Image (cartoon, rainbow, N blue to C red; front, side):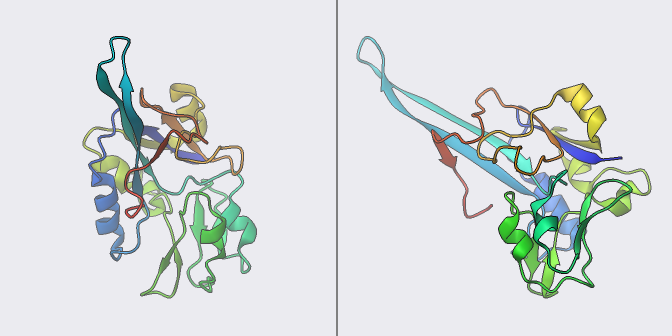
Length: 205
């Protein structure tokens, strides 16, 4: 069984309730974010045929955490085996008793999912709220979303229901790590690798 996330970028308003709920539930410090909300923006002024000026801009949000990839870069580079995929549900987790805090996983992950916790002295990350999953609940980020823009479940079921799209800008192409996410794109979404826009909140993510 492989679990994953569904992200409805059409519904997401960037309220960050998911991010705050995760920080509260996991008791994360200010500099550690297991879930981050990307704001991708772009556009410019343009002239119409009658030489009038109007703005042609776009913006949309993506709520991203660990994507529990099928081929996780973090697992490949971990020198101690602390970073691993759980056989029971395919979630990528870190054995905090084995981790030496070298940060190799963070440097390798294209989604910046592994987070170094200064208080603990080692890496930490989203584990899909495995302890909630074990008792039949969904991750806290999913249950907290006021617009139901997030879902979580067996990835095959999510793909059958929502499609196969796993990457839009500013995310990297899914071919690198095969992330277990499904994205419903915002009408303004740009493809992965797009250079017409930029992150509107780089210091937050």
